[in-house]
Length: 479
Ligand code: BG6
Image (tube, rainbow, N blue to C red; front, side, top):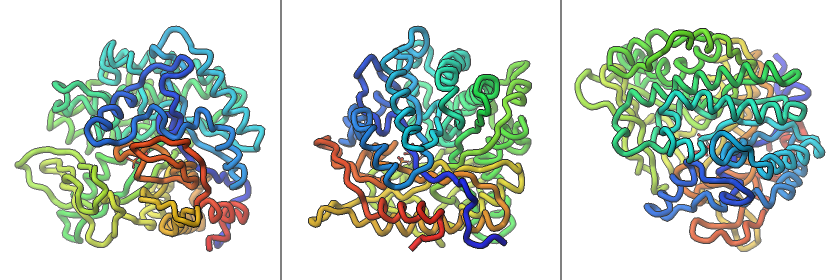
């Protein structure tokens, strides 16, 4: 065993996504995305910040990259905003938008930081929602191709690593949080899986495009992945966990790596009227879209128990308030599984279980099954941070979380798993997808609140200094 060593050339960095950091939502030709609209709704309902300014990265990107460089980053994962590049979804390109991404990427490269670009991270141009309800309509596949072809061609000489669609499984699960879905369609659960099928086609097209256009390009999906443990060793609970793993996890990975829909999950969907309509040629296209790696976003593990056939179907709840225990329910798939709280794990304030071992578990499991290189493109602790009177942020809880997860990555590597990158969430504080800016993830503090965007001043957290040492020592010094 190669105890305690990360491979030479291992990529260390962190991640963000466009709408969660950039701001400048209506500047330089950018038009609305569905996230601009959804976040306006959260603002009106809960008082959370909108995406209009977010962390103002659009205006601070040079300073942010200087901070990344100071930490020793060798990579940075971010996404391109579709509606900044094509404000109307398709048609005329916004040259100012393209210029921004050239500047960003050039600045990264000049600082020795390898970009990992996500093509799509929840922020569909609003114009495509207005036109045909976005991912609910098959037209989205060709419009996605139009956008993806453009950016892949534009940045082909600067970007080697591409991830396609961020977290399809999470989009299916948290349907209305990641998509704008008209009120009257929200209860039609088949649409979740139909939209996912269109995403599978879009993903395959993007993989083909990267292979066709980018010299030496590598591409894969970024999946939100949580192992599902049985609540007890009762055979029924173990079976329920298997069912949940099939529908939550394998259903996606089998598409990326085998070009098939997992039989058990598909059988469940079919017998419940939830299966996607698949047109002739779709599965062939999916097979052709080969992935070179899998990008994993890991935060937590889940737990399942047996579930009777009767009763209502429901999907995973969220905790809006940030008070432990306020989660509004767990997913339930009648006759298949019931998700539940794992009594063995503590959670953060938003009820996300903290489970470093789960990361080693999935790295080993996925690598054993698919034998492809793995990147960690998200991993982090959402927490309330305090800007203390000494002008600092002592986020020891975050250091603890990251340290334990990095140890798990190390262990997986010791067992032969090929992990090529570790990018925690997030490089700087940003707008959470469901909880405003008070739920913080960054290594760098962004001085703003949900109520007041202030100057968005950047301040190094304790985790910043700690991560710098981790990178300097190639993961050996975790103290
Ligand atoms: C991942 C997403 O699911 O989780 C990110 O890719 C998101 O966009 C992160 O920010 C944390 O979730 P949240 O809801 O706390 O922002």
